[in-house]
Image 1 (cartoon, rainbow, N blue to C red):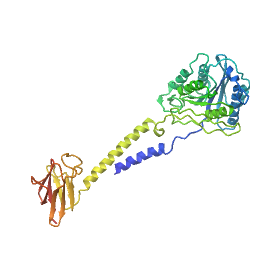
Image 2 (image 1 turned 180 degrees about the vertical axis):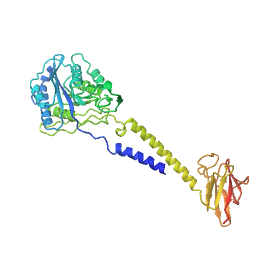
Image 3 (image 1 turned 90 degrees about the horizontal axis):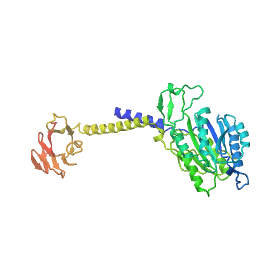
Length: 414
């Protein structure tokens, strides 16, 4: 019983620690890199008369205005296009006003180098980012027109652990590499000491019409390849909602695989931030790591063993008291089954050690005239002193054979 109690306590401690307190989604400061499509197609006008690029500028500005009121110390960078070359318009800054000032000067012309702009964003995060979590927000209305492979870049981003030298940290060669199951991407390398792993995630916002499924499919493929999120938007309200969800979504360290695309509902410019729609990702069980899962399995196995042991002992203890008894012949009285009024001989009583015994096989019962034994329809019959019987009186010292097992009946004189 003490063994069982220890197993239960250890198992409950793990369940309480991990399942009872599910990993909380915490707002965490991030390095945000906005890639704003400034190709010629962004000059197209929307239903309200403003161009796609101006709608994008206004939506990003409204987002930054809300970030000014936030306590999170995000840092921001801006990348746009010039022909088939991406331009780093603004390196990382913690002042959102600087980003607003650069946005005003953006003009739409030229091509759409999505793949190259993503590569530039990754390189800038590695070299200049100062925060552990980084996010690339790609806002575009079309496909890569410069011969790049944005899906390939996204796959490399997903499969590469991007670890950069942050201020005050020592080189990775001085730290011991360990595996850490962390959600945002498969950048799984964590380092000893204060050498952090850089987690880079990707959100793609398709500023395309619903009547252009090919472009939406291609953009969704980029997000999926990076295990990121994809949002579609057709007007400034939907674009603002998508930006809020992309930039402000909480980081959940228990998630690993993407969910289906979610299209944010249109949000008025003065409305509060939309509810976070972080991309759902595959999780380990209750957020547990492999060590905790293995430990839990071991404890569950031990718990089952404890229950079996207790069951076996309870079966034995059931026959420890009484004036009458049957003992298995030839085992030095190690198996003695005591009883007062009745006992049923069965395969279960012997814990299945003799398969030739039926279940039930025979019954010994006390009557006013003494003890009697009767067969209970067994397959191999019941024998008393080597004679097959269906019902007979039994006295002290008689030999009972059921199946392949032989017992001696004993009666304690009162």
